[in-house]
Length: 101
Image (tube, rainbow, N blue to C red; front, side, top):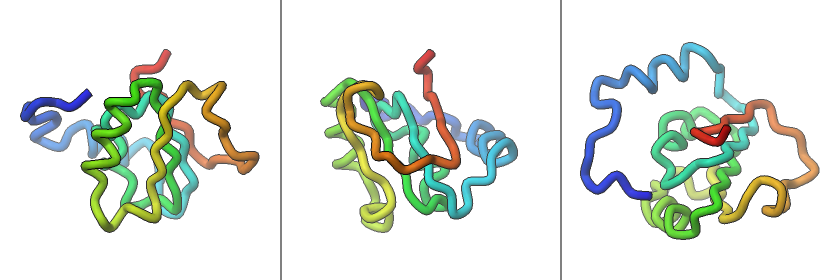
């Protein structure tokens, strides 16, 4: 759920490495285990679209509440697991499994 004021990745190391490994520009992304969106915000501005899924409804509610106005049309959050949330038939360019294995 929410990080309760804890600053995560203050040096930007995790974000930098993520962008070094994956080109997010213009990509359709599915993120499984998105939690409160902690990782989502690190790449979403570069993406064409993001579908972020997590089974914890409270975390999804927090993520929606914290979603920046500029990402309203890009990032969609859904509560549920990846098998039952009803992923669209569309293919994704990138899949991120955030602490989900």
